[in-house]
Image 1 (tube, rainbow, N blue to C red):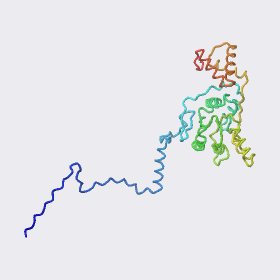
Image 2: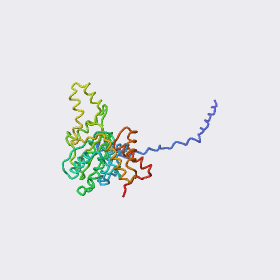
Image 3: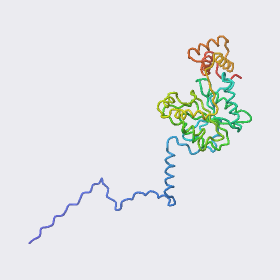
Image 4: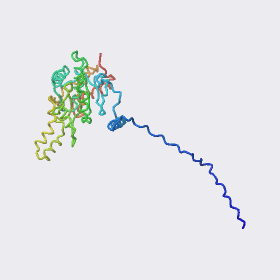
Length: 327
């Protein structure tokens, strides 16, 4: 029997778009192996440093060796650095009227501290606009310019919302050769804010305590730094109201020096206005000056150093006088 011829299979068509598979697949590059001498703890430490460097507001690596040598005044940044202030916004000490007693006490306390003698933390409290923060800045400039101090007294402002980082700042300043005033303007606490407890420990009572080269000056409209409602709430809700209130108000006791600022009289207000006009060379008849100044204070509903300065700015603008110190 004759065999049937076998059918030949047609050759397979190749897709020209798809390249032929290489004989050996290309291997992915392997990650560089960590040095064998690094153990687990060192790897973790390096990883944490890398994370910290990428956090927002992280302190730059090129911090100066002595940041306090850059200026006389600084603003504390909660990320852990001091920002120099080349020109401080302040008035001359002689222009602050109606606060003579507080001026003399704070100046004497600051002079003792700047020359290495014992001094107290100071709380300047009372009526708004009466020159509490202006007095702190003016006293610092006056004492720092004296030959005994010769620029070695530094002023560092810490904002109220950054009080919780105060222990970090104290650690940085501990051991510095300079004498330092840490200044907090408008310090007060409300509601369930518990950051005042860290401030208490820094002022007095903590293990480390306040560094010998640091003193704290604060201003507030409240004598005990806490809202009256906050104290009254403790009296009404605590098991032992007396102890609760004592715990709250004990913060102000950490300030050894209390300086109270009260509303000025009409004569003191007019003396402030006259002092500014004499200093900046604003020429105006005395009776006209007093009449306009009293009218200005009436429209504002108060008399204070701040109101006097605002009136002088308005008067200088109308008289086309620039507020620069008269030679």
